[in-house]
Image 1 (cartoon, rainbow, N blue to C red):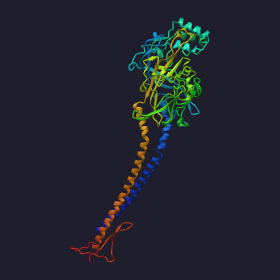
Image 2: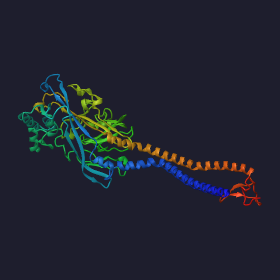
Image 3: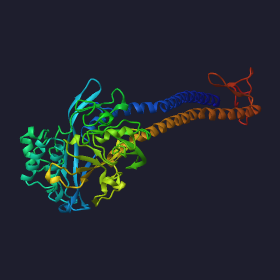
Image 4: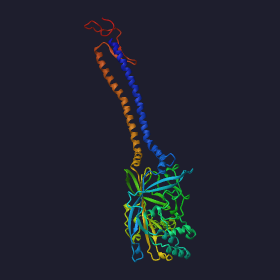
Length: 539
């Protein structure tokens, strides 16, 4: 009976051993599979991520970037600062200096929307852009009813446009300015100077008699942003690459108003190139300038690397709009085309041709980076790079703008005119009218999404290493029971051999099962009870 129990126990032991071996083989296969997946993932993860990233960054009807581009989710503010002219009555005095007091900011919330979107077969997209502004009186330092004294833009522009015409035009213009009671300066409310516009008899006359004005008059009122709020036509028609064929070209302009160059500047200054201002190619580097087209300046502008910075915890490269924009060819001979036909000292850009002939010159606020020539007749101008620098911060991997501060100043050239009585004896001054700051900074919510996106390469590497580690652990775990079983069997085998030295029978481990080993002649061992411990008969 004892032998049968030993036989059954041995058979169960053998079955468990075989099951353990089968289970270990399965675990080994799983471990090897996980290791292979981990190695493959570590090698291909960056390629997979780059493919997915490029798929979402290029413009397509179903891409994430298209949704963000069509209606910009990043809050944009536009701040206006006016220079209030406090001593215009003394303009004709000797050694005159204009006293200017900066007022503002007058803050508007700005929203962008792309309309008239057309997908073209050459992997470009054509569209127009609507901008809307809403006054934020609570955050502003002033109201739209504040009075500002400044140069008379209409009268000065009419004089400038007619400057090189014959006396048959200049003499009647001089008489018209006198008859309509025009002055060199005006006082208007900020709302009129910005979006509302104001009427002027000279402007009304020019609109009704364009053959006398000999110029295209864009509006019946004047305001720096008159008729722009909600207009789909003001900024013109854009044609931009989608990046479907080459992701490094995403957001790059091909044409503006159906042409690849403008008629407002000569040579390279008139080329239409660079970003439209909201999409930039991925893979930005410090040594490559960033180009952007500005419809307000009717030209492209170039940013140069300044420093590494951080926005909402995201590392970025800051690019600044440096002296090249306002260079008259002194720093770089290729910038001669910035002069626009009238070269002036370093520090301003002539945009007269872009502004319907008005004597308009763009500079950085408070004439930052400009020749001292521009401030010699001005009081109240104090340039500060931290407040007045135009910069753009990009996340280099994706090219996503993190922080943008567009800061420019509008100046009008006041100069004598021998044929217009009102301007006979005025001094020559590049008169600052206003400056603005258009600011857009990524929100914490969007920053969190970008951080997660940027963490994917590290996450993928850790996942790959994790899979490899788990696979190794599983393989080790699969072999561990075998090693322990083998050690246990070896110990049991040595114990049985010792028992065999004292007993007539021993147990052997066979292919099929464990069975007793018997001699040809059954042997028994006497016991006190007279029964056989092993064997079938008593001696």
